[in-house]
Image 1 (spheres, rainbow, N blue to C red):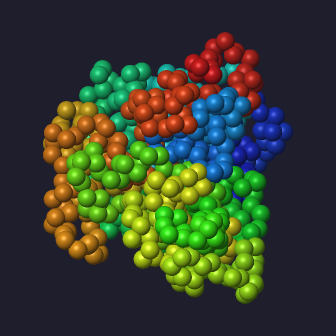
Image 2: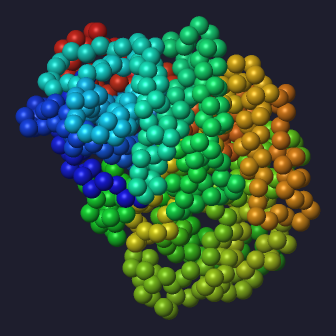
Length: 614
């Protein structure tokens, strides 16, 4: 999980010199240094540093709270928990002044201009041709990666493929179809230059490789095919290209050293971020000096904007006092009113930010009732491997800031007994329970009908028990692309190309994997689960594909992009999200162009229109 130690200083230098197409930023004029000019990219160090810097820029996105909100809030999958900004959940205050949106725009163009410099001057670098070829392929991958981010969020955007060295005050928006053409050209060329496996010494998936480029190209074709302003004709050519590209990756996975994990739980198992299913990750560094993240409650650069706090956002308020005897009858008045703290904050359970909690749609989707009204959720292991179900009694923890070194804490006593360390203090089975079940557990059971804005299942994919302190951000790499999604990209493309059996085959590969458990409940085995999980071509619909993406990809920062891509954002938010339903509009499928760092700096504003609705 270690990165090159020159990333931090190089990013600062290159960020100061990089002129985004919107130009005219005072800081860039004031701090531009002649010794960091274009000739730097034509040196081996400059070529490597330019590419490294753009990888590092990803950390402004994945892991930051602002970007996380833009990616998942205001969708069918999540609503706000007990804390956090409500704007993206409720579609009430998304404006051109929004910092999260500005961050996507500004940081993407910094990375793009770095890559423009690398690709314009890097071919002259005096270095081994194979290494130089790989670096130029990485640069094309990254430029396409960031332009794809921009067109998904903003539509028509300025397209520049040459290095900017001086500020300007004019710009125009390039039609989205032309931007897609540039993205596809970059990725197609990158595939021919990148290695089959990432060129890293430690097995990291934090560098571009051929399978990552194939995955991204397939998703680009898929997204382009849905967009009437970008696609070729009715999109069929794009959908076929998306399917063929994804299928090429799937069919050649042995060549690329990738495959589906046998057990869904292993995809996000701590320490397996470079596992066989991962195609591309946003890397992190466990060395406090170079991590760009706080540690042991220390401070971080950029006021935390590059910290990975994904380990906090999805965690419920498990430390809050709660009724000790809920759902139990025949109690004394004292027992009926008894409350207590069942669990103290620790590194295993995370810091309860409560930014995102599942909607009823999400719970229902993991039940697979869209597949069959009588479906047994135990056939699909993904709920149990996505959400936390058990919290153990852990008080006193002896950790400063929670229980401290206190040893005289009185353990809570329920009507079933007094808790001791190691007891199940809190159990969220994800289903309704009987009073008899409650009486068998010394701790407290919380059923779905009892969930609140504070109490709900914690999503576990990003938890990090290796931190020095329970309040620390995570130093785990974040998986941005994985083969599991490649199958679903192929399925969606096949569905749109009216190849329903191909779509079903791709979905079944994922669903059959989800049937795997190391042990099965009494009454059925793996063969029974696989049979129940298998769908037919007649069951393939867009709704099923989107639900399958929820079951497989929940919490992986894709959902707003999924709904915007498929033009289902308004329909599904109105149907499944009570916070977003009153205000969501069609124009919310694009974000506003930033004003302070773009529109307000232009002298030709009449030639650079804002997106409708903002």
